[in-house]
Length: 177
Image (cartoon, rainbow, N blue to C red; front, side):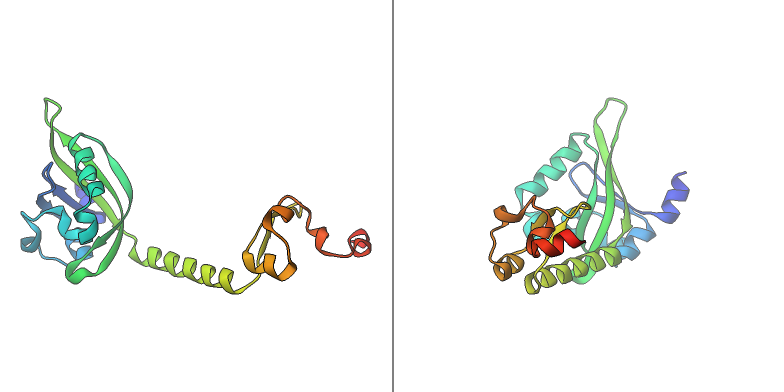
């Protein structure tokens, strides 16, 4: 099973303090390093400097050292500062006495999908800033409207949320549909 995971996943091992013990080829390829460039270095080499020096980062390693499993999407830095997004799980490994002896990370490179997602979110935000937009539930009740919509029609959000969209047309037209 370990061999199968080694072939398909990026894997790296750390001591409980974050020093790199070993990394497989998939991890090295994802991050752009050779094994000799990472062995003995600290995990912080893959983190943005501001994050690596933060209390949050220290707490991250404290949690791992305390035996807590952590899984999430992480923004990391590859060689030459290249942005790499990974879906990863950090898994503490215990000795017979229950002490954490190392942390094994299994990761998948999600950079391409994350980049598309971030780009799409930016486009949606730009459209929202430029267009009047209103959101309805399936019954036609107003859930939300952006400021452009409110300004164009002269309403406040509190005046329209929960109302039916027919409030924006003449009563005779609303009755005809």
